[in-house]
Image (cartoon, rainbow over all chains, first blue to last red; front, top):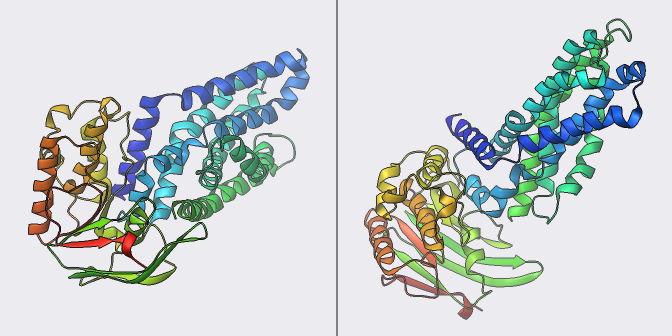
Length: 221
Length: 199
C-alpha cells in the first residue's frame, strides 16, 4: 500500500510541476461551456434544458484531452519496465496511475462542472445532483481512459485513437450520469441512476487495472 | 544460489534473434555479454528480467526466493534512463526507494558522486549524469542479480572508476552481474558469452 501511495504521490507531483495537465483540461472545459451559449443563442429555457448534457459532454472530452499521457512518459523512459519488476502486482501500478489521473485531472474538472453550470443556466435544483453525479462518474471516466491510454501507449500520436476507443465506453456513464443529474424527470429515477453510475464506477475499478496491465504487458514484450 | 538459463530461443518480429543460448552464473561472478548489433544482447537481458518471453527454454534462479519472480530479484538498467525531468535528483531516487523498497538515498548518491546535485532538477543533468542517476538506483535497493545494458555509455573516467567499485561491492556481497557491452567494463569478467558466436 505504501508503495502504491508513493507512485500516486510521484504522479501528482509530476503533473503539478510539469503543468499542462489539469490547467489545459480546465481551460478546454471552460471554453467548450462558454462557446455553447454563443453557438445556441440566448434562449434561457433551452439552455437550462440542455445544461446537464452539455456539461457532461464537455467533461468527457476534457478528461480525454490528457488521457493519452497516463502511461506515455513512463513507457517511453523505461519506468514501466522497472515497475513490472517491483514488489507490487502490475495491476496495482496501472490502478495507481489511473487514480493519480483522477485526482489530478478528473476530480478538479468534476468540481468545476457545477460552477461552470452558471454559464449555461443550470437550474438551481439540479446543481447538487449534478455535482454528486459528476464526481461519481469522473471515477469511471479516469479508469476507462486508462484502458484506452494503455492500449495505445506504444503508438505515435495515439491521443486521437484514445478518444475513439474510449468514447463508446463512456456512453453508459453519460446516459446514467445525465439521468442522475436531472431531478424531477421521474420520481426515484435520479437515485436509481446514481446507484447504477456508482456500479459502473465499481466495475471499472475492477476491469480497468486488469485490462490496462494486460495491454501494457503486451507492449513491453 | 545459481542463475541458470537453458536452451533459450528469442524471436522478435518473426526473426529468430538467437537460438539455444544457455548460461550459468554463480554468486560473485560477472558475465560480459558481447556480440554485434542486433545479436540479441538486450533481448537476452530483458528475457532474464522477465520482460520478454522466450520461445523455448527457461531461466531460473536456483536458491532464490520462492515468493518473488526472477524479475523482482533483479535490477535491469536499460539504455534509456527512467529519470523524470520534473523531479530533483534525490526525489527521483526517493521514489524508486519507496517503490522498490528500502535503501539509503544519500549513500546511493554518494556512490556515483551525485550528492552535490541532489536538489538539482533531473531535467538539467547531462547525459552522463543521467546515466549515473540511473545506475544509482541499483545501488539504492539491494538485489542479487544486476542486468546491465551498456552500463558505461557516457560515463567519464572517474565515474567509471566509481562504477567498477560499485560492481566489486556487489560481487563481494555474493551478487551476480550480467553486463552487455562492447567496451571493456574496467574489470575482467569471470565469464564471457558471445551471442554472435552462438549457432
